[in-house]
Amino acid sequence: MAGSVLAIRALLVAWGVRVLQTRGFGSDSSESMDTGAGPIREAGGAFGKREKAKEDRYFREKTKEQLSALKKHHEDEIEHHKEGIEHLQNQIEQHKKTMKSLRSHN
Image 1: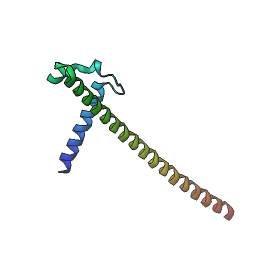
Image 2 (image 1 turned 30 degrees about the vertical axis):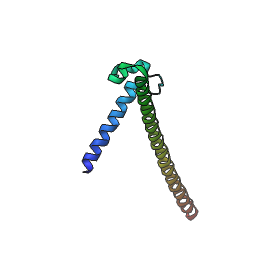
Image 3 (image 1 turned 135 degrees about the horizontal axis):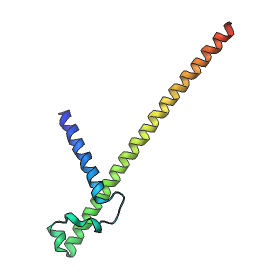
Image 4 (image 1 turned 180 degrees about the vertical axis):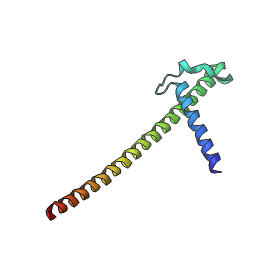
C-alpha cells in the first residue's frame, strides 16, 4: 500500500514538472501554448473562451500550490539547519569550558 502511494506521488510530481515545462513556468500568456486544444476550444466562441479560461485558472492554481509547497520545503530546511548550527554552537561552548577548566588545573 505504501509503495503504491509513493508511486502515485512520484507520477504526480513528474506530471507537475512536465506541466510547468510545457505551459511556460511563470508565464501568464497561454495563447502561445494552444497546441493541445480540444474540440470545444477548437470550435471557438463563448464555450471555447470559457474552457480556455478554466484551463488557465486550473494551471495557475496548480503552479501556485507547487510554489507554495516548494517554499515551505525550503523554510523547513532552513529551520533544520538553524537547529543544527545551534546544537554545534552549544557543543563548542562545552568544549571551551572543558579546555578552560583543564588550563586552570595546570
